[in-house]
Image 1 (cartoon, rainbow, N blue to C red):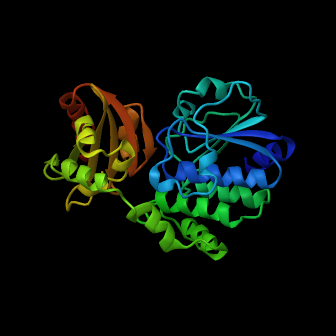
Image 2 (tube, one colour):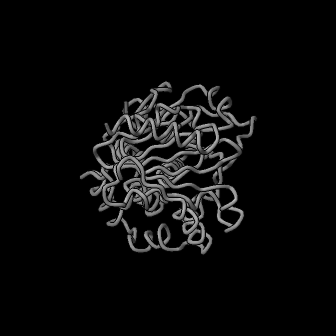
Length: 318
């Protein structure tokens, strides 16, 4: 499929690059790496994401050029949809994107639905950025420092700082090459993991106080409510990776974070050890992701949502 994508790039001029709502490092890093690359070979590029860029990713080159709405007068030859398990993950501008002549789906989620006219989907890749890296090599396009910084950040964050089960030899190879090009690992780690506002720590304290250990010590729940955001001044993006705290408890096989989005509606994040496929659980609720890190959205009261999730998780542990 890479050959078909290369052909589309060489033949066309104007491209849209979109990634999923509530973006994280792989979505943004992959989109910006591809955007800079295409611009460097004379293409017209527009990068779209419905939601604001998280504070800890605002150091990435070209992040200020990401738009949150697509001007209906813009005409594109093709659209790249990155890191999305399904097309509707792009959010509110889905109908405008759907009308673009050619949609190119590049993703590494095992739950990818296979949408688009051209697909480069590989669940064995550490990240979508790993697939972008391979594509750039095929075109070929020189990987500059700005591109390398985006790719490194994407790989780093999607592998959980090289701690998750999707950390492959390929991930280390790419990271090594990006460092050779000039990326400073300690500087990136500082931006991503160490420059946190005090509101995150205040929020974390409230979240950890909601900890429940269930299922004979194998399941852990934590909750983030709208009132917690109001009390601490924190924003939803600051909950990223908080689910890893209950996951780190000895004996816990599945950890779940319930984040209140609105009355009777919750975003649910799952994390597990290598023995439990939480992507399969997320699919049950219309979500998706990776075998050990996934998510979805569930309607109902908190008690109802917890009950549904506990039942779904318990079935996989019996």
